[in-house]
Length: 489
Ligand code: NAP
Image (cartoon, rainbow, N blue to C red):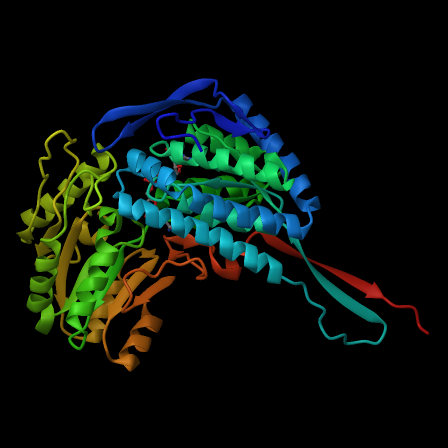
């Protein structure tokens, strides 16, 4: 990969870098408000060429021996690790993610390639026990074919890896459409892919990366007759639009959408441990993740003590230039993201919440005005915006409960169903509450539950489909059975 000062700004299709032919996507460093690059977008015609190349890539991948597929996928994981520092710096430049976290994201992305390669090696069909003497049923697993992935800005590399690793491992091709804020990491990945594919004899057109007008690109890709699957991570609003487009052609969608995670702390929790886990879920990328704790539901008897300890930990967070090693809180992604956080805080205060810590922008010399202070809002209510919608910022919205039943009612009273956290030392309560939470991921005394071997995904307005684990691979395979009639002896 080139040094970040030599950025790749061409799209990747037909196994080559192709200059976009439409309005450019303008990429800004959110820390400094400076222009990083202009990436020419693709027209409908170039998108059609990418879809056609994806169809050819699917045929070539299907024909590729499992050993070569697995080698390609393993090589991609290794190549990410080998170029970790350059990738992490690029990721930080365009997203504002603190550099230590960006390094973690590269490793996290690489782990999806490792895991998918292993899962593909173990994947097997089945031969069910025969019910009659002269017949055998062979259940085959086959790749789904040409797929499309649309990804968000908050994990510019990991969301690509979570989708692409199982796709390639299963023998599928994929066109990737990264978010407009973070196309550079995706294009840097395309360089890595092209090199590794060539090195192991895999088809260079198994992957395409296109940037530009999202609705147009999605429409052209989903209308192409070869497209068999869409995997989307992003907002619920856009997920609904895409689900409608998929329905028209009966394309199978996997939708990883927004969340509104509750963080429940019971009176019997180990409070220091609960605070550590709260810091992990709340301050990873300044709260701009789909599984970030959005509502802190605290047992009344420990509420004050929990917030006191959390506040002292939050005071230690270094806000600053995300390229600095010590920084834990960088800028929010853009002005719209900042405005939403400000709106949620103001509305909560208007309705009676108290700002216990932070509450506004932190002015940073030489940096942009998108740095929001780690904030605690005490005395929030379930009806406030900060409790009803994803705030996507470094804000702890705290409210209290008296009984387990009341806590569960509050936790589940949301259209979202992605993640939830429960902090308690009572194993019976832990299981009871984990089972009663209406969501796809539960962090049980764990503030960082995402991992390559787990089947990540949501329910209700958080979408459907699972990524990660062998379930992630299953999503890119379909079953066929061959009923074999034997001649009587
Ligand atoms: P977003 O606005 O939905 O954008 C996500 C992707 O969809 C981007 O690539 C975007 O392209 C594209 N897009 C936008 N409008 C489109 C349309 N009409 N047709 C097709 N594609 C379209 O979401 P975001 O603001 O980037 O990401 C934040 C959201 O993602 C949050 O709700 C968060 O919870 C969710 N998220 C969920 C998960 C999960 O696994 N469940 C993980 C991470 C994030 P452009 O950028 O070019 O507009």
